[in-house]
Length: 145
Image (cartoon, rainbow, N blue to C red; front, side):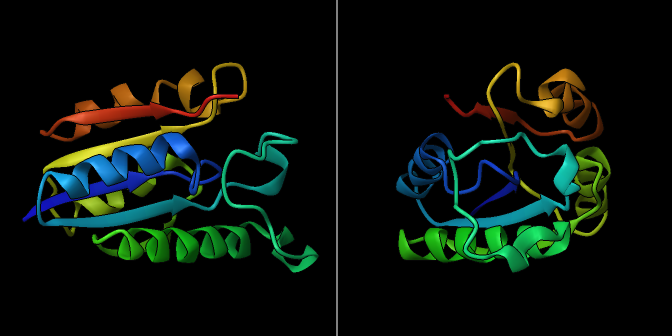
């Protein structure tokens, strides 16, 4: 069984990430672990609607938004034939990945980011940072505007 770590927040539910997940499921028995850094609301890209929409104003707190998106993504993965679990992680995505890697192992890490210009993760070169800390392939999925 192939094990994948997905690191994402606002892009959960977006087409680009969904295509990558579906591709991995088609390759064979797949297990996914999704870590959603609890990005502070003021650090989210304003107006981004490429992923799961927020259902109510109660979702304004970072943890609530992350938990909501995580739940939807786990359901999406399971509905397409993959096994899935996950957690809300540290606000710093590199720390969130590091925390998960201390307790679990994977075959690949999938980093899903907002488009260039909106993505703080691309600006911080998250994929390279993750690649240096993990001895496995890292795939970057960049959402399209």
